[in-house]
Length: 309
Image (tube, rainbow, N blue to C red; front, side):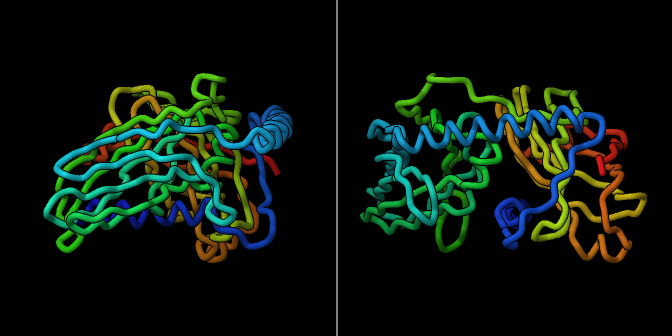
């Protein structure tokens, strides 16, 4: 349980990293070897996505069929509809019914939209014995935009139940799949423009670009893809920027046959302490481990790359 909370705290840091805004647009620098091609492709993709987004707004949200997603030990979850809130964004409305004689708390351990991992930290539901609750599981705007998702075609969630007083796990996770009315209408593209940093053991990591002047300091935006049969959590260590050691923050779970966008965060205090005004060169190692057993699945040799100035 302690390890689960540690992972939760690390993931929360990543959510704030990806979503926090200072009111200024961070400077974005391509990773050098693929810089010119990525920059042009990035501009083209952004324009195409903006057009698709406008078209999608005109068409409205896809629909989901009202359906019971799971019914276990007296706790029943029903998908009701897709909805959009002006503040929270797009979400899936759920009806949670507790037909048992014990109190339940429900969480979503992992969530994917169109095969891309999404944050789940904004969803939880406490339902007393014999009661019901209307809940909405929102998809982070930052997650959707980062993955280039303009049309929600497919949702995959893993739900788990626990005791709201002791926090003891009761059952789960149980995976459910919710196709929308747009399912199969197009192929979700891979946001993999950039420099390939690792491609072994069914895991592929691409460095897309470096952002400076972010809310926290600086970040390396990554595309990750897991074509293996086992879920993996990717982290990094032994990181240096311009030859100076820094502390990187990366914790990204990528389920089997899924993709993810992630950000390696370097705090501004680290950059200032080492007199780093611009990120020019980065070296680090990646690690992959099982989210269930915490066994190490892979450990890379040092990976080095330069950043276009």
